[in-house]
Length: 259
Image 1 (cartoon, rainbow, N blue to C red):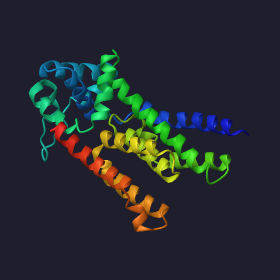
Image 2 (tube, rainbow, N blue to C red):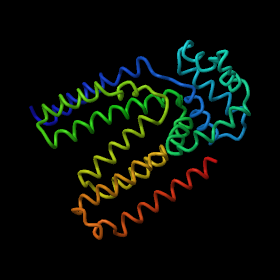
Image 3 (spheres, helix red, strand yellow):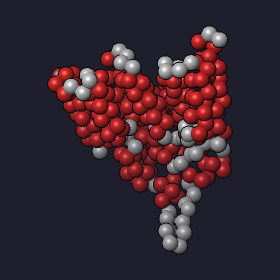
Image 4 (tube, rainbow, N blue to C red):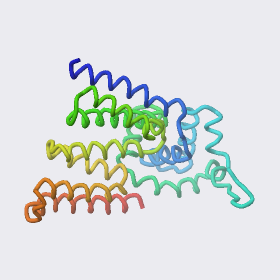
């Protein structure tokens, strides 16, 4: 079988496998905060941001799922009115948004979709699905470099099947996107692809989830160190040092912007 057919077979099987998360999405309250954060980039009126965030999410979900996002789960041991308060109090809702604005690339993409006239909540699900699919594609491409396409297909489907990635194809957070970017970063770094590609991926990853810096920097230095046969002098050159300083600076700027 030609390689292109193996790739199409893998794409089809991954698409079916990842559809599991779309059928039964693990939706949490965060989806409202991400939609609200995107609206806050476009509007200054807190009440209008609040109204549109809940309106968009309500339009994207079935009534039962939406009601679970505005219903408190309170017990005698842990009384709470968190969700019901945020559903009616625009000021309280606005105070939560800085915790979500630390993902500027993700929030910016959602804001762009809003300006284009599409429902941002549905777009969030599309991002997660396509990200999970991308992980499956990259996994196959990685494995076929070390084995035959047939075995790579079996191993990639098996690996995806026993992991939680298909379930996360319907998650309403940037976690699946960050995972896809991290896999792409590792793939490009490991196989020494074009430098600008994995550099841009590193910054995109940081702008999607700034806490991934703890994975990016160690993997960068360990890979370069191994690639240079454990030679410290050849590893510590201007480029990786400049990249490290750039990523750290970006991390600080994102934190200040969100705050």
